[in-house]
Length: 156
Image 1 (cartoon, rainbow, N blue to C red):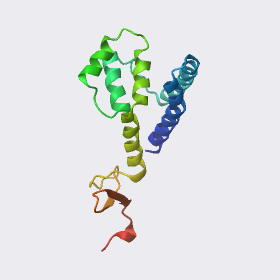
Image 2: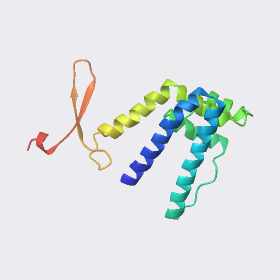
Image 3: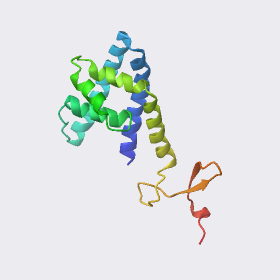
Image 4: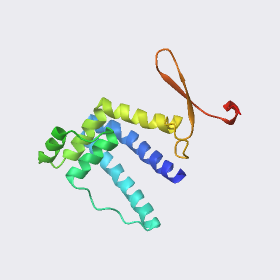
């Protein structure tokens, strides 16, 4: 779990560093981002080699676009977007769609939801180890405030 969290943290920091350059779209920034991306790829390849894991082959365009949507927007792609992506002959279409998704409000909302879950824990009623128990306090407006259940707050 700690190793996964470390990997997520590393890649999140890398994305935060590279996102401003992506949104400006300047060629010099693109080259800098690609150089940094190669360093990340080298790091991941070294970790895979050390663990004896083989890398998967490069994803085809359809698979890439579906994963891009799920990762950056949190939903499967619309049929129209999927067709637009697949029909685009531009070799930089992957770069363009990443840039488009990073500039969208849905990206911000999706990652806010992910980080809120990481920080506050799952809001499900399941008491599995993956989702620590939480209690909720409702208000007149219907919003919910989540707080972790501690031994001291439990009644016996």
